[in-house]
Image 1 (cartoon, rainbow, N blue to C red):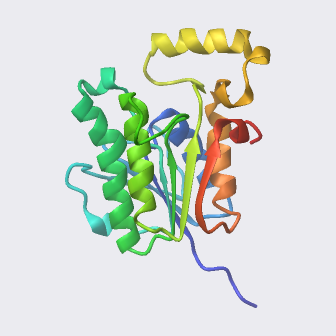
Image 2: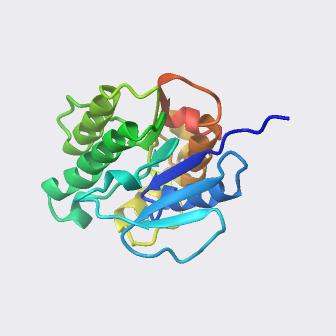
Length: 216
C-alpha cells in the first residue's frame, strides 16, 4: 500500500477577503496536510492543520517559505497604503519576494490574485502594477503559475470601503445587463477557484478571467 506524499500550502494575505475564505477552505480540504499562514498579527481562529508564522514582509526569512503550493492573496488600495510606493510594495514587491524565495525552497506551484484589466503597459497605475507582477512572476518559470483576475469583489471586508459598497450595489442591480467578465464576483468563488485549480495537475501559466471564475 502506497501513501500520498505530505503536501503543504502556504498563504500570504490570509486576513484579507479572499485569503480568509481560502484559508478556511484549505484546512478542511484533504488536498493539504498542513496550511501555513504568514501573519503580522495573530488570527482570530485556529485549526489543527493551521500553522501561523509571524512574518516580516520587509525582511523575509527564506527558511519560513517552505511549501508545495503558495497562494498569494496580498492586496491593498492606494488610499489604505498611503502612497503609490507603499501600494506597489504590497501588491508587487511582497508577492515577488515570496515567489522567489518559495521557488528556491522547492515550491512548484504559485497562485496569485491580481485584477481584471491587469496590464504592465496600462496608463492606469493600479492595472499597471498588477500587470507588472504577472509579468515578473512569469519570468520566474514556476512549474505551475495560476493567475486569477476577478472583477469587483463581493463579500464582508474587515475594513469599510464605501466606494466599493456603492459600486457593488450598482453592479448587483444591473448585473443582467453587464457582460459576465465585468460583473461583480463573490470572493468565495475566487477562493473556490484557487483551491480547485491547484488540484488539477496543471502545468505552465494559466490565467482565469472573472467570467471563468463565476463558474466556481
